[in-house]
Amino acid sequence: MWLQINSMSALASRASRLDRTLLALSDPTRRRLLERIGRGPMRASDLGRGFPMTRPAVSKHLRVLRGAGLVTAVARGREVLYQLASDRRGIDEARIFLDRMSRGWDQALAAFKAFAEAADDRS
Image: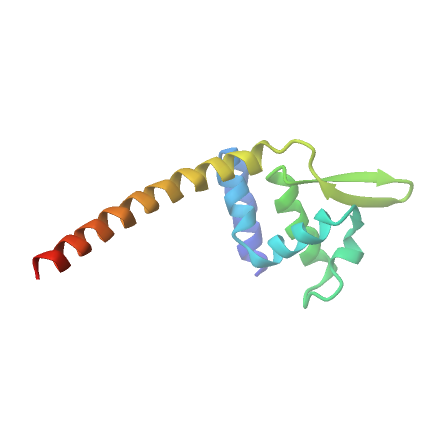
């Protein structure tokens, strides 16, 4: 797992914003962390509760989320709180990409449906 996260971090540093966003969202643990952060700013130790991993592993996941621009770390006194990033360009780019892909699938399925219905009519 450590090697996987480090490899992804190295890959993400050279990738486009869309690539970094999709890479960050590709991991179910990071998606769950992002959902928790979406409820409000939280400390890393609180975010990691209930996950079967160490604090350093949680920190590495948070680093990937920060590298993708999905979360930010804000110092509050001696604590660091993680919150959703105010810059939503990464999420917006991912949404546009997925919408475009979805339209392509919708068109392909509509064409297949028309083909199947035409074949039924010929039978």
